[in-house]
Image (tube, rainbow, N blue to C red; front, side, top):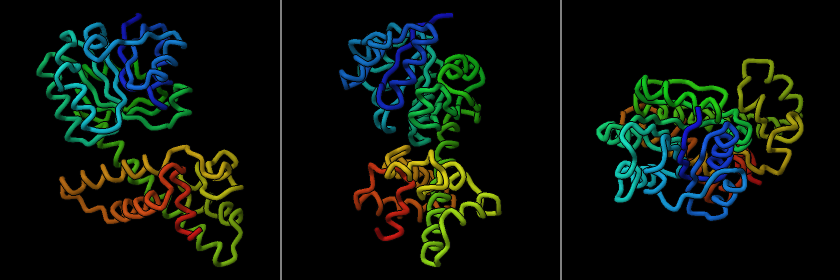
Length: 296
């Protein structure tokens, strides 16, 4: 069944996601501060919206992909925003990666207005967005998840209902904190191996089949050679930029502080990625932190 989908935030992730909805036969109204991004959607068969209010009023489903919690709250709850203009019963899917408190606040405001809403942050990067193979971590009521799954299946391959409102965001920041920690550990192992005269390929061959095996090693190896598909072979062009990893590590630390959870390795990973980004690494792939650890 074809729906009118409003899509706000047509950047590197949102643009390809919106195009996949177009390809599936939905009418997609797109809005972004970049006219070039809206033109790209129009070239793919979507339509340019004149603004948030008009988009919200016309849409059966609204998907948002925005930079931070403050942007999400403004777009949904602000004057002239989504909740003020959307029809009762509209389904809302926020795929931004934001703080849990903001996700829960917006969800509560949407429910109060008679809307259906899920938080559905993603993993899989630009390639996953283009290929429709993203992983969605979804928080929200069962009914809203059931309605959202039809659209998420178009944009992704793995759709997991994590629980109530905000649990999608919780899953995303916990996962990416673990990813950041493990990447630092893998990089430290390769730096130590270099100092000890152990060939990187030999370490990879051993650890990839031993107790040190992890995704950061076997799917995203931070040194050139062992894994041709990794950004290390492209001078650390992202991929997943270090600035985005730092954003997620900061969100994890905010959540840890507010909940009283002890995350000393998460805190250390945030500190290291802050130093890496401040030294000019923010636009490099997050695996490029090996150069910072190496001192090069």
